[in-house]
Length: 310
Ligand SMILES: C[S@@+](CC[C@H](N)C(=O)[O-])C[C@H]1O[C@@H](n2cnc3c(N)ncnc32)[C@H](O)[C@@H]1O
Image (cartoon, rainbow, N blue to C red; front, top):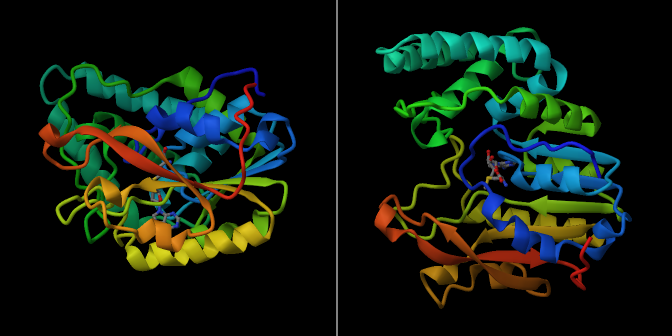
């Protein structure tokens, strides 16, 4: 276990903070007994589960993956250049708060710069330009409406200004703790299937793919230009079986289609033979806030648990 606390530094759609207690009960006993050496998370997003696992258990090596270029760029900068990132965020923060009126215009100016400079960036090779961009990602994420990171079909970040009175743009202590935690973490830009070489029988893999939409109007799977559709969920289920054969411990979560349609056996069919549990979650299932409510989340595991407490 690490002696410091490190928490997600971005707000991310589909964040799993509220489910950590339920997940903990279902983690493999081996991780609680210190017998898991590696942790792999192929859809890391904001990393609620990654930070929980990496600070709570003694894990020698972590690998996190995501297909979102801006997200992975930002993790890399936090890992490699936290001092300069903190300075860049301090500058954005002081310019933003110095404005009594016009904070919205400032937000839109940064958003425009961010979108304009995208084509000049090489997302595959770490370079100094990434630092300014990571600061912009964090600034936009903390000041935009609802903390969503959404891009349109041209890959442009298009979320409106959030109008929050006192947004938390920089939590320096946490960012420095995250940077330290990332020292033993490899950060990968790529598709979930790219994690296969890093998975063996001493690995725990937590998979949190974009939700399968609960209904036609649900737009909460739009994390990235290309939506994750039923074909991708089928490809993922095949991949789950490949990792299972390697002897890894696997936990996958998703929305339960039975919340909307009790006859929908989509995941039961894809994951037949594995242990499927339902845990209660509070989640927005519709753009209409009135439709927030308790719904179930599926947790699919390939091992038995005795619910050890550590
Ligand atoms: C439900 S979110 C993960 C949320 C995360 N567990 C958290 O607590 O913040 C799903 C993530 O999968 C990523 N993603 C979408 N398609 C992917 C793919 N084919 N391979 C890897 N990551 C993908 C998205 O960019 C998004 O960050």
